[in-house]
Image (cartoon, rainbow, N blue to C red; front, top):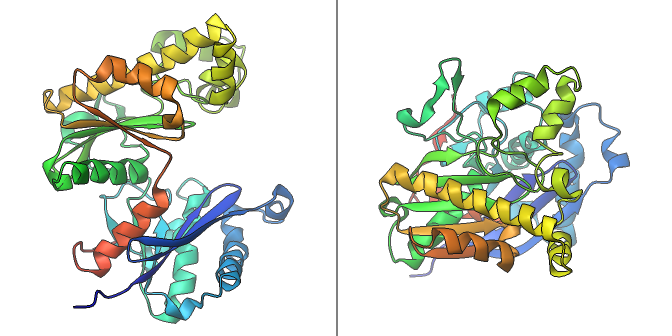
Length: 357
């Protein structure tokens, strides 16, 4: 019996670019990162005003590849900064569009994805959906307790890439995703660690409560942080930048560029070596922390993200955590693949898309 071919367009907007991919079922036909120069984006007062502009650039790229949109079966879009939702697929509907257009959620380029997808899909009569939105929240209730009743621990992680990597790990073990316990460390500009069990992400170490990273300070001593905030030396915005954007490697070493730091280490920079190794040390600690969630019953540990290309960094991490479980390394990110695969599972009936309300 001939397998039905679904043609899926994937849309993943970032602050200065839009990544798109065309897939036949789960097989990539082509991908493109469309760069948006600052002067082009400066024409738009708000991010939401970029919808038509970004949509037209996507359609132009498809035309350059001699692909007609009427051939599409579905469109999969990056989930924006919606209020917390369950994992998996959601059909883009009027309520979701209303929320994404509102001023009640943080302004972010990822909010454009579902809006653009709907504008292309609706005239074609095909489904537009999001998959594993940034705000996906599947944590156990016990994991939400922070220690301060006023603060609930949020579920914030690189969920899209982490989940697809956990699925890859399960496949390598010839098991279903729901039948494995996998810890995934996503190492990028921000670092998040997730524990996958029973087909859910049941706990996370987010990028502000775990290891420092190239651009994030991570977990820092709270009492000293409070004193610094009230010292009169820094305003609110500066302190936020110290935590996100100007923290971590860039604060210690003046750069967030890992190859540059590794070259300094190679040339005998002992301080750069200490700081870089400390980041690996903290990543390993966070992995160990999440191993306790499943009482040490971890099938695999996976390391992914851009920094996973570094054999030096991953080697240091593996030395410290391999006693917990075997470690598999998946360098880079697989967001487009994750969106296409999720959409394909819905089209084939393997998964059911949820209704956003």
